[in-house]
Image (tube, rainbow, N blue to C red):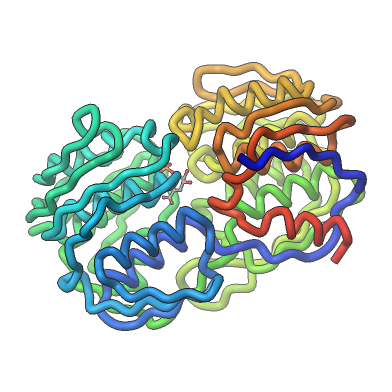
Length: 431
Ligand code: S3P
């Protein structure tokens, strides 16, 4: 437990700070580099706990992976040479690690057992297990495969035409990864587009993938390494500093090389809707994942409504958006966000409880929340619920509370943003 009592004296955050690599792309960079024969160099990899556990998983399969902080080198003989892991594979808190690896391992000729921490062990895995069983996968686990630990006896799979019942990139990715090893085409259809990093990386690694509107079809493929992968800064981590820049008076923050994939930039659209002063300069030159610099300054925000197709584009940013909304003029309504209930914690219940404790006026709804603006936050004792994004939202809140914020445990921040506190210090000192 790493308890923290925070009350920053500073009244402004200023300067440039580099945001660590994207968590979703870092996981996928290890998975695809391990599947392809040859050596892949990954730059700006996120050395957060979740992604480090994905590295460990592939080491257990016999892939040689070395890393020096954010530079990772993956040397693989290809998936045909994967060896059966001797011991269960531990995925910590990582929903992405668990769901993507269940999909991948279902079609490979190995037996594996996956398990996770107390939070991941309560999250639903049936959303990937159902379609995979339809493809012929042999998977068993707690509550008939609904929860970890899960055991997978990989075998030959059939293709499937599957319409996602939940708006989840993890489910889409699990089925597409299984599809790489099926005996015919696999199609995943999604009514609302979710993050497309798996599809982009399949293209980069030369998989046979075809995307028509909302249908993604993958054929059994052999992968080829592109040699190098550059991971852009994580917009979901940047979001905490974008919010801080917008709500902490007189702040001005510049964040270079942040991923600007449109399936992830809902936070930028919402900041615009709320009237934030922001400048975006795209800097990427090649195909693949787009990125650019974002500059944000303290702004007079107004409330907004966030719903529908926008939700998957900012699903991980809702805790910090809710905090911003308490400072905006007028009401903010968030709806169609029921997926928040099955994140690292129930983020609807957790956000509402924390913001109420801090002194905001927030009402919980089935699929979101209603936040009254113009709140003066006082501070108080809050829980991070073992959830990195809740903890970071609470830290940012402490910049605008009149009294201190006491957080039960901030250690989960290492999952996605191990340098969070150092970078806050940089911005406090205007570096
Ligand atoms: C992720 C997808 C999202 C997101 C998670 C990362 C991914 O989850 O919340 O942080 O890397 O595919 P869902 O697929 O459950 O929506």
